[in-house]
Length: 585
Image (cartoon, rainbow, N blue to C red; front, side):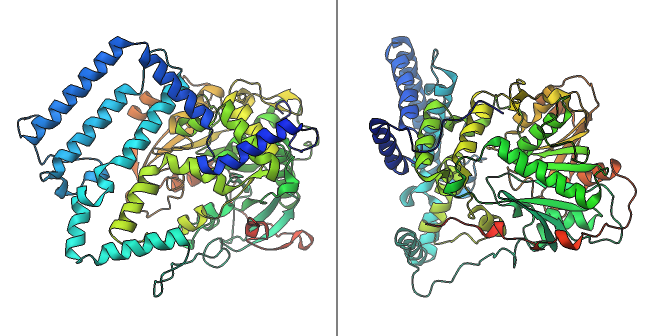
């Protein structure tokens, strides 16, 4: 494994160190759990470089004047290149009402402000991280100040307020009051609830293994004959597993067993303060290796296993496969069944370009998170939520609040929203280790990540690989996921699908508007950069699930009768008990 993380216990801490830690942890909630030092350094980097560059100041002033004149010409109807009434591809301004004066002028002025700050937020000489951070938060401020967010400057909201006689504004005010006070207004309809085991996570199965970190679920066969090679699914440890077993109509697990596959699923336990010292090695040993061993006891230790990992579960799976492929296997893994294939869904193995999520990960931010976790022993889902809201602020914050508070339209709950609100936690030591070793040092991609004290290399992997990236993924950008092609000479079938990090994966057959691209690079094939791959790979309408299932079947043996589970291994019905463990205040 990587070098040891700082001790998370409070012993050995000096009074002055404790003072600093308590101050940082107390201030964190008021700052969105973001390091003020990181943000201040980025701003100072920008301000100093601008302050010592009078030429750049003059150029930006001239650019601001030019854009101001463009806005004035647009308002006066003198700009033939941007006629009033032109369509807009931004969802905030897509309604035809935005083509009418004066709203079209406000929209044009906002667009010019975006153009100015795109250029002004990046200055020669700034570090890349500070430049990206400055540009990101400039977009955040503009997203907050857009004319679409305010009643007097949004024609859609004004039209709705007039048509409803102000009733929708009154309803929105009640929504705001409910959110502020936490008390529901009398007579308000209760939102739909999605209960685990009743509405979601309902695919029949049995818990067949349990340790302090995972429960292993084996789903009941849905066909009289199944492929002999089972599929072991490793979800991310920062999410409840039932993202892959939502409602019956969009459950990946239910669909797979209906195609003749035996499916095993890890259900991660939600860690408590006592689990603060669980490490990445523990997640590897108690998670992946213990689960593989349990699958071998049921299916036979000589039966190959298809392994699939989603998000960070895929990163952990890639580490496990690389460790098992090297000459010196990890201690205690000689009794594991062999692997047949590896599937990685929205999972990064090269963190050199982790996307916008990487903006929130640097030494100062990790220090702040360590200070938060040292007291409580873990990082909660609520403490992680701020960063993800920043990534999707336009959809998750401003557009949503505009519709709820100005138009009185509550967003209807869905199974995916219910899952997203079912927060999980991460133990302090493991969280520190994976941020440092993967995000900061990119050790897996550079063959420096250690398991049992020895480095692993993805170039040792020879299994056929199926990898999926999604077009609008802010957590695992598809071009970052694609970099797996550089790290292994194994055969890689790569899919790029529409949607985001979750919706692109939960993309069941029949889901309208879905399409994907797919291409296979043979083992030891030549490198193709992501742009060239995207230009050449054919586009297919529909869900990518059937293409993956055909790939799994092609790497499996002919179907046979399913193996029964030994009665002694059955610990209870799915969804098990760990999925119900939530935060206890």
